[in-house]
Image (cartoon, rainbow, N blue to C red; front, side, top):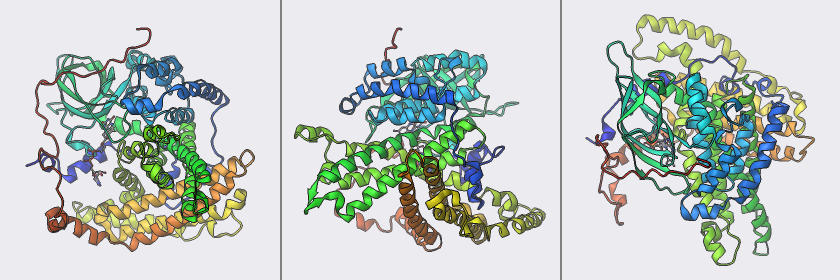
Amino acid sequence: MSPTQTGPTEREARKVAEAARESEWTKPSFGKELFLGRLRLDLVDPWPSNSAEQIAAGEAFLARLRPFVESIDGPAIEENDSIPDEVFHGLADLGAFGMKLPTAHGGLGLSHLYYCKALTLAGSAHASVGTLLSAHQSIGVPQPVKMFGSEEQKQRFLRRVAGGEVSAFLLTEPDVGSDPARLACSAVPVDGGYLLNGVKLWATNGTIASLLVVMARVPSSEGRRGGVTAFVVEADSPGITVENRNAFMGLRGIENSVTRFHDVFVPAENVLGGEGRGLKIALTTLNTGRLSLPALCVTSAKWCLNVARGWSAERVQWGRPVGRHEALATKISHIAATTYALEAMLDLSCLLADDDANDIRIEAALLKLYASEKAWTIADELVQIRGGRGFETAASQRARGERGIEAEQVLRDLRIMRIFEGSTEIMHLMIAREAVDAHLAVAGDIIDPEASRDDKIRAVAKAGAFYAGWLPTLVAGKGAVPTSFGEFGPLASHVRFLERTTRKLARSIFYGMGRWQGAMEHKQAFLGRVVDIGAELFAMTAACLRAKTERVEHPEGVELADLFCQQARVRLGALFTALWDNTDDADDVAAKQVLAGRYRFIEDGIVLPSAEGPWVSPVVPGPSVKPDIRRHVPQPGR
Ligand SMILES: Cc1cc2nc3c(=O)[nH]c(=O)nc-3n(C[C@H](O)[C@H](O)[C@H](O)COP(=O)(O)OP(=O)(O)OC[C@H]3O[C@@H](n4cnc5c(N)ncnc54)[C@H](O)[C@@H]3O)c2cc1C
């Protein structure tokens, strides 16, 4: 049997994900309320702000960072597949490896807003620079140690990583991607600590990091629950071998590793947050960690808008600038409006995180999902707008004497954003789980095949009481009153639409629950659309609020918010229609047949890809038989 067919069942995988999920909601959540049919503008309006000190520190840092970013040779990073040591040193000197860490631990103490603004700026030198900083700070050692480390661990590690020592986060294994239930890397308790064994795949910064966060499974034993545990590991510990550096279609400057652990001793004091808490730590870290990839998507969107504007006005074909042909005008308009909305969503989510009055896990997840999908569409549109030049590398354009524009590179760099830190499919499931949570909470036993008859009867009564109170609230609301939301001026009609559509979304989820009941969790296409609707509603809200907040500074923003809302409303119409009018069932049957080989004949007529080697490399335990290729980035002043 191949490794993909063994291991935990779907039910077990779900159980692991459920155990890692934070089920508590102690703070209000705009995102969660949306799926319950309530547009809680009071949670986001007025637009939150950073304190005067946070703004001063943030602006001062951006002013220092900008000239350094301008000095980075992006094309050289692309050509050499590597970020030069001087860039590491320059970033370390600026404090860019500890942007969000408190000053008491050697960091800059920046707010989420300014951390993300700095990533957006740094990513414009080369997406790999932004990714290096993001992987180090959002999932590497700084964030989980700051959130879950003991005081002693903070003292031991944070100053090092703030000063420029690079860190990495190692969860993925050849057989573990979206499904952590399969995690095989083991941590066996021994005197004073643990012995780690296993192989980790694709860790960003893995070839250059000096500190690692490693997820490994402690076996359960007498009096010990064990479970997936997070360890901080010194990368030069005996028994660690960096066996490969991976190469990708984009982000050519990042350094990702295959790292083998063979009897690596890790002292007990390096366990983060306690045994068995690893996945919860990973998920909680990502609650705000998920803000950083959207910051890099905003970089790309702004960059694409700038190129689209310059090129489309200058390039003349068929008697007019190409941007004045309607087919391209629609793309340019989409890029401009979406860039405005993406930045609004990012800033709003960051400010809500800084404010700390709200739970932002759904907003951050919606943002990651939406920004990665939209940035990809934008970059694809730019390639089209650039015509043949969109497909040509910047180096080739420069060699011909033209301005080198990296449109194809941006497209390649962006593709992974839809896959790592929660793929689009996994984000859909994760957010959908929260969207239907209210229903599961009251109706869980009705749809649970393992619940007893008595439990089901009790659940029916409980659900009846909940729905009797909840359903009437979805029928009427402020959005039906023509004069409501007047404070949004020309955008008021969009906000009324938002209020009405939020209720419609909740009604649709309710109908879905009624129709599929226990099978709802398998209706991934339906749930995906539900989440996409939520993302559009959040984006519209952010765009309208941004325009209202900045109406003095940028009155023209109202036009962009209006445009974005018009476009989003068209997309929402299609999404709502597709909830009930789709080919999901036929697709499901067809996919089964494709997998079973029924339609193999349509693959005839070409030379097929090699069938050599396993789809997933088996992990052979034991010491490494490969040379260690870990790269030591010299530390300035060490
Ligand atoms: C450039 C790069 C950098 C990375 N950096 C890191 C890092 O720093 N640390 C780290 O630990 N990992 C890292 N990863 C790994 C990354 O997080 C995984 O690639 C990602 O989680 C997806 O896992 P996978 O590739 O194994 O895909 P799989 O899990 O095998 O998924 C394959 C496909 O199936 C879909 N799918 C899976 N499960 C479901 C489901 N239940 N329902 C619906 N669809 C599903 C997925 O969305 C995907 O489309 C990196 C990967 C790359 C390529």
